[in-house]
Length: 233
Image (cartoon, rainbow, N blue to C red):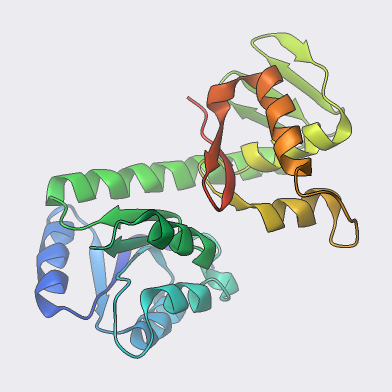
């Protein structure tokens, strides 16, 4: 099941926040579902499969972090964007949000115009990532000025062929397949080296450094305490 286009789920225990954000999203043409707690939010998400979920962190009974972890267990929501909307802006709180499965972290207060812009940008990134996944199925990924051919193990940047060892190639292929998506270190280890392979803690860092030297520093961003993502241009 694909996420419902233009449908957003807003989960927050504050009624005023629900009404204010819902009003502004409705003006932009979005259909808004609301829930006052995490458990109701999970059930609505399971039933309607929204395009994007705005999730408060500080809620009674089940907080936003735990709610996000439960949402990410639902396969129907694999393509749904989850964004934390909270007054807590500390680094450790944002890191916890990414680890729980969130795609982004918006700190309140935020103006309606900026919030709408952020939502539209996240949806554009998701759509671009979906297009890349379709290209990946055909074994070729094109992103910015980079062409990656999985079948031939070839990477071409600005018309120049790059020489990448197998693990560097696989690492780039993983990151570039989902632009802006943060891949945790554990996930990278699992997908590139496998759970049964024992490697040093610095293995990923070394491969990332070498990859940046070849494709460019700006393409691969470190998300402190979490992992890495491909940001493109």
